[in-house]
Image 1 (cartoon, rainbow, N blue to C red):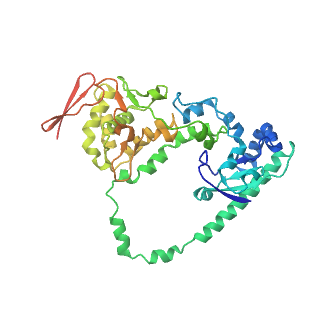
Image 2: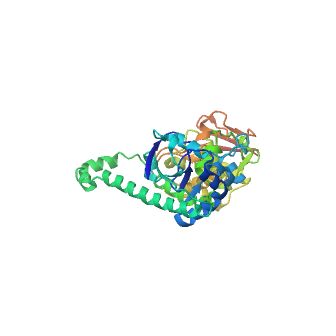
Image 3: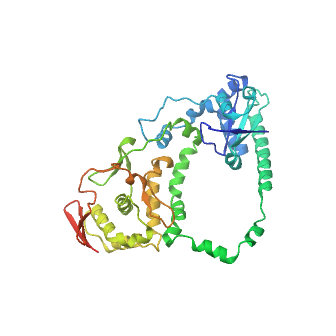
Length: 388
């Protein structure tokens, strides 16, 4: 096994895949893998619980719906792009004899990725009838050696944590605890609740990726650069992203009402201030439903604006889910509700000038100061006067 450092890879490496590399174009091994790479991938999955990536054929593994998921804009999606030549990978490895790197495999671990290093093992010569068994053996050897190396590095970096803790007095730790910003129960569980409630979305997303799709290849070949769509709120309250082929983001009414509340406050809303926005959210939800609210609906509004409950976390998770079901997280991050603990939560795109367009002026709430009153106008001539 050999260890290469690298920089500026054409993709983001992940630790569950091995990549074939060959410095010589059209070598005998490369020619064999051109025909049998799918069989090798199946064997490596079964015996090593990893994926084998033959980059020249990488695009053949990506279904069209996955390409559109990672690159939702039809203007940027290039369906004719081809895979990465195996020999090109050697250009990114820091070695004095790049041109002499024998055909082999590259493997990353979580530790090696942090160090910008990759493990390499050459492949002995093989024939068509031995290609699967030979490569499986190489992968197993590489896994074992990489694990040993990672463990040795960890041992060399261990610190006596008990000794470190003993040097910090109780007053010192109390000082650290007091420095934490003020936060509510909803703030404390914001990230945990989001991840827990996104299980269904993750399962649907993973189902796409399980088709043999290499995420590292997708990042390199399907998204040449990041471009975001402006948002259009139609007269009937639909959320549409025009630049992404009029992609519609679907949400349940209360979730959508919460989302509109954050869109109307690009400066962000602190969870502890949610009670101050209860009447405003009530008005938005009433307009969405198109009539008077039931006692159950009013109770739902009270719960979602109560910072001691998890209802607001659930709604923010559903907002995130709605976007993640339609696009990759790198794109969705522009549209979801996010923020640091005990800090205002906001939607990034709402802070950009002219990025959120309301098709009908009556759809977006208009805030007009009237002394100590604020007038909010909604569709169907619903005028609400709030007193503070």
